[in-house]
Length: 132
Image (tube, rainbow, N blue to C red; front, top):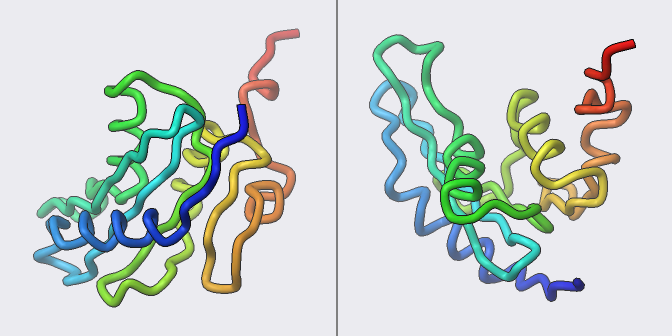
């Protein structure tokens, strides 16, 4: 099923949710919005913790919302910083996006729209976990 991608809407939703980020330690607010294959838009913002390494990236929140609202596959994602500028997801989040969007999922990056295959070449996935 083909889904039209409204990139402007994804950016607006990512900026809106970014304002709800909890970032008292880094003061680095992040928001993300993703289009699901059924047309829903899911969002997330970063949530820090006094135990710095336990903070949650915005993409973690978005993937949690994806699954808690019925699942599906991410088709397109836009992650923004506090200025609304495109932000490249960290390595852990690239893996989350790969597993929840697949190789053809589109990601708006600081250098333009890229497929997950371009963002995470030679990705590790469920097929690598098969027992022999």
